[in-house]
Image (tube, rainbow, N blue to C red):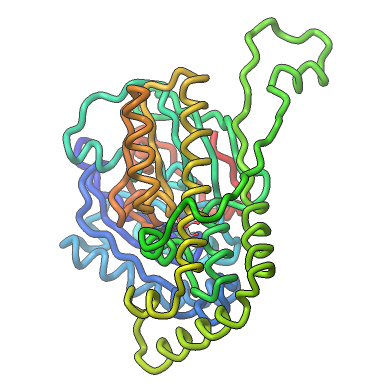
Length: 393
Ligand code: KG4
Ligand code: ZN
């Protein structure tokens, strides 16, 4: 099947996505309905509301994706849907709809791991651009609102297998961006706002120490389980931790008595959104932030980005990675991109990011990840279900 048209459906978190992708490398359409306005008043995602919004959006979003691609329900070859990880209720909306479509149209149904989708966001555009052959193993950092995971990917033909060599012990990096933005009265989602504000502050103004996790390597853990451990060289894990920096920002806010100005900013932004019915502009944020807050934001972002880059590049050296992928919502961050680019280049390691549109959640990456599975006939039966804590292997 050289020319396969896959309809992808994504509903794992707070974006309802549908996309039509040809043979895992050509995006014919990519529609994303964001729920920012719904969750904004709560400063974070409310799972129950997310499911309800997916229910409202799923039919029009799929119709629009088909129309923009010039396809009909009948002309697609397969349907791909995110199985997990994500919010169970949100995942179930996409899965139920995909099952119903597959059943009614008698088309094959493919289940995709959301994290593999993020990896395929990079691959899709790399192939689309006719990029050079990738050197394996590929080290993939998936950094989003729910994940800060490092995977070592190896290829078996078109199918990739993944070994997890690091993950966050507490908050994901995107979660830290969101929580700090909420704490500073900047609203939700925090990542894009902090990204735009950080260049206006001094990143050296506030010193943040990010916890360096001392971890036993895998060989030690295996030894605990079986006395006849292998003689293989130990392979360390590269774990992250971002809940401490959020507490450090809170301490700073308390010591510097920033609470009254934060409350003023929170109210002014809420009023702007309520009266203008649009997202505040950069100028609005800048007008409502004093120098100290801008410096705090810049220092926070610098600390997270430096930690992500240092650990990821150390992992790349340790595991002798041939290529680096950085994907997920936080990969849209400008400072992160420049830092990884610079440091990977110094290490002679090719690094690839998705375009900004494909960094955050979307269904094109789900349709792309499904293509090798379609070629291998890896379909799911109608009784498959959502897996909120699904691992990537
Ligand atoms: O991949 P994604 O859309 O959803 C998840 O799978 O979690 O990632 C969303 C996360 C949010 O935490 C958001 O604040 C963060 O990605 N994010 C950013 C940027 N754009 C989105 N973080 C930093 N800088 C950005 N430009
Ligand atoms: Zn995601």
